[in-house]
Image (cartoon, rainbow, N blue to C red; front, side, top):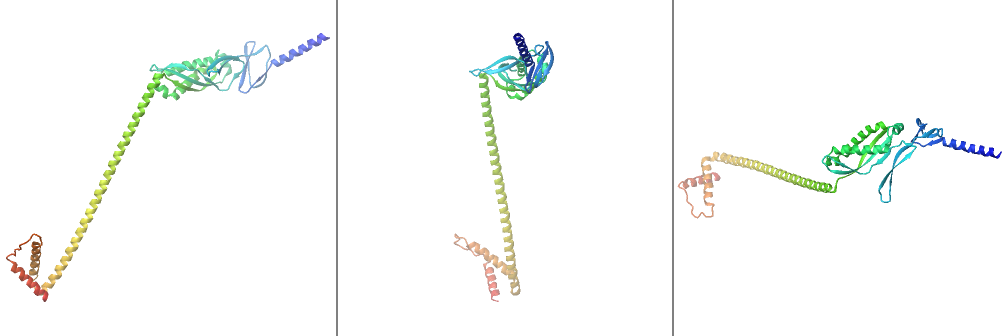
Length: 325
């Protein structure tokens, strides 16, 4: 009786262990590939799944893990696990030396973002998926950088990233993997090359500074010349306008004086015509004006009266008689 109870208890324990071994709980964004007697049977999705122990076995996949030691160095290790992560995965590849088109050895560190789209292909089409992706990325990076000069490598990161992503995406499509992005973290040329590039950049900055200074001085001189030109033009126009106004004023003054003189002469002539000959008056006035100019100088000590002075005096006498009348 006791032996029978012990056997039943052992049998119950075996059934419980067997049933527990057949239950698989799969987390979200994960999957498990189940093989039955060594052949692919089905894919377990997220949630509770039941398999037949011993007959059904999860297929293990090799996965890549990176950790840092106490010195900060990154240590890469590969482990087997039975769950395939369907989320996007980031691979930080170690630095590697690549040679550019102009034979410059450069260290480059790359990041790769990929995602498993078909777990069956990622398991059965390639033996070690992470290692294959790493080696493929390294060789492709060498090929792409080998087609570019150092200057193009430093200034064309977006072009390199796009080209790498397209090549890797096409190559890994057979493995059921989608390469989303490739990023170059660091590009480190040798020390002597960096020193030469810094000197070149410094010389280029000095050259640009001198060019900008010369252009600024040129513009300043041009603006100064244009300002001087405009000031001279404005001054000339002002002087021209002043001369025109002055000439117009003199002309108007002369016209006014001539009109006044003509009016005076007209009135005198009218008065003379009533009482005498106007010719004698005009001749006498001209003689008097000429005589005044002759004696107006400071150095004139001697005055010579012309022979016809008697005519002047007679004219003056006639004017006197005219005024009296």
